Length: 98
Image (cartoon, rainbow, N blue to C red; front, side, top):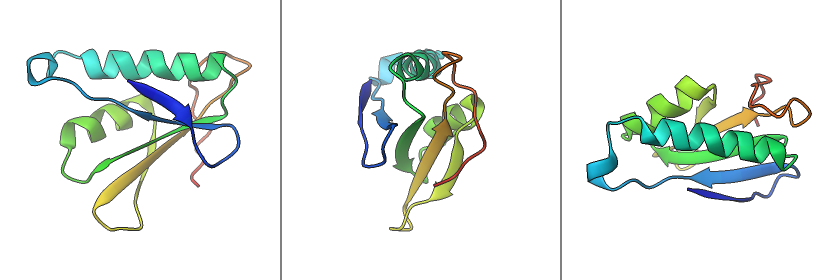
């Protein structure tokens, strides 16, 4: 997992890489959920991720966790954003898109 500052104030950027043997067991979703909790604990107002439009597993995890998905400017990738409520210490989505 990666969690780092993004260009937008208060928004962190995340990414995840799993070895083939770890895929399909729910580990990615669990790790991403824990990352959202950590981001909220750090006071982030949002978390952004980017993946390819063909990465159906990643897209499913992002949707399941409440990310809003939109095509990236390059037309090949998907940008995902979830707004956080850092005061609640949770990853409640505020239904915002940048």
